[in-house]
Length: 430
Image (cartoon, rainbow, N blue to C red; front, top):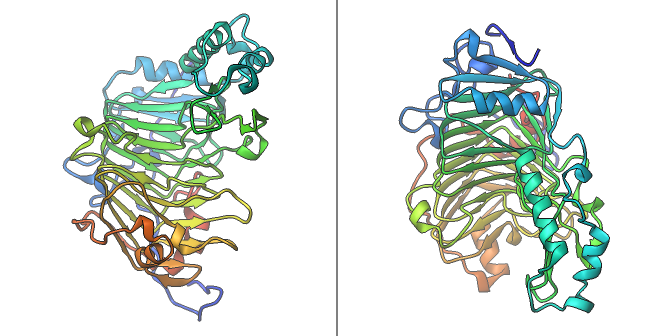
């Protein structure tokens, strides 16, 4: 059968004295079936106005279980905008046939590498010619194969503890009222990255496809998911022309007029450029007054940068735990970008040897930021002060100009490493 309809279904911290800390259970809503739960009141920007209910009101005939990528996309295409619940069971693979099945006839990576070798092509001119044309056709094939367009009034929820999407890209684009919960999503691997010899002085490989993108959409709740590079961390990718053959883009991007988004209790793992909120300084026509997002109780583990990088939006980042692993590539955690208003409070940072607290914040453009009561390796640190002392050329101004009001329980940041290790990510609701 293509579809199957269903009925509703005290911490001791190293380096500190024993502390009795108040910790909150992950937010729950009405009923025991997680597919019927809605975003609780006051739980971040997605609770603004009518709140976020997804497909919770779906009738029994609009609750679907899917076990393949083809089924999943077909339900999304055919179900329309009335409330619906899509239950993902087991592992569904968007590229089960492999990259070769998507390649245009005649495309050959070895020939591509020979044609555009900087020793032959140089570094001054964008690539063009037969192999680049075939690469672009191959990329378009992958684009059609791996993107899943999510309609309005939808809840997508994993069944049990191991529901997984491999290599697919969830596109929440120009719709309202969407919930995504309890899924592990392995970041898409771009089969056909493009070589750009003009990107920096030495050229670079550029890739496409985010694991999840919220584009122009409103009232979106992303909760208790695990987003990761999974089987293909950057350390496994080859090197061509002296540059990493980069096959990953973002894990979760919120862009192009998206608004009223809550990202809670997720685990974002082993990825470099992880989360953009606003993807262009020139997008003010779409983004000014929007990109309001809340990030709370998320784990960022082995993340190189963009946790998030913010443009334009009033972004509330509280009660998250950032871990920089030994030896990993690390740039920064919180990016202060064009016209942003980032509010970072009561987060915890665990930094490995050689990583200083001054690098946690990164200034991309002149914009104020609020950073209060954040802890680094178990001790309180004024993130703005240490940044300005270490990197005075990127002097940050304090005071984002607003105060978040849409919050539920706020935990002591010293409790976050243990709390989120137990409760953040897929398979850990309740």
